[in-house]
Image (cartoon, rainbow, N blue to C red; front, side, top):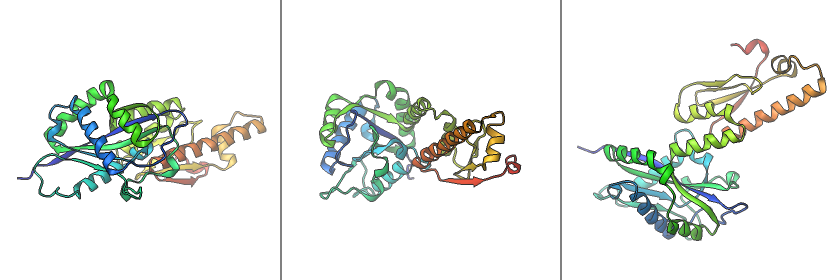
Amino acid sequence: MAVSESHLPGVIALELSPESTPPRAAIDSDQAGQLLDHLSRDLALLVPGLEKLDLTLAGAHFDVAEALRPGWPLHRRLDELRARAPGQATRKDAQLIAFGADANGDIPQPLQSDPALAGASFRVLPFLISGDEAAIAAAGDVLETELLDRGMASAATALLAQEAFATRIEHMRYLTLHDLLAMTSMQYGHMGLDPLWPILEAALLAPGEDAEIDAPPEPLLRLRGGEVSITLFPPQEWSRRYAANEPDCDRMQRQMSRFEARQRQFAAVLEAHGIPVVYDYLLGTALNA
């Protein structure tokens, strides 16, 4: 009887020094393999029996939003590459599998990062722990309780990553995707994006479910079928809903400009997370439909 396989997705989180940008999107295959060896040794200190599980690493760095997208496409693609690795069909022992850039600096197409999201100082490298369901469940329990407190990379691992990516790394740690979600939620809160989080959380963790933001002065957003609609208001309808008690026309116009900027901000965040955005132009009579 075939053993059902399960997966535990995680990331290596790199906090780069200010104004430090890695000169390359990915390290070569040899460097990726060395980094994977170090990752395996670091995690083995936390997870008993890790040597019996597959560990797969992409030697390429991504924006957090690329790792937190509906369906977890980055880790899904990493698993697809793992499944096609030589010897996977007949192997009996656990394997360490690393993917890096070839001699031309290219990396496997599914693992190319988005250049438009390349400027942030917080970058992540996806990894995947794979094995039978019971072992993965046990490893997941350990990592979910231990990684936030004890998940700092060893000094040797951090130095290797710094040399491989040719950039200064201030902090390097390991996170589960749930850890990364929690950290991102806190960060977005500090950025004033708390109202948007229920939409993001539903799109990521409850696919197929609906959610909405209907709390002035915030924009009106609805998540349906994996797509977010943002309502566009004609000036008179916007004024009725958002500035009914504002007698000063100039001040009301400035408020509307800030509101439209907020809509664009929400749309940009959602699109960075791979969530489709559409715009609905609705009149007041349709708002309660």
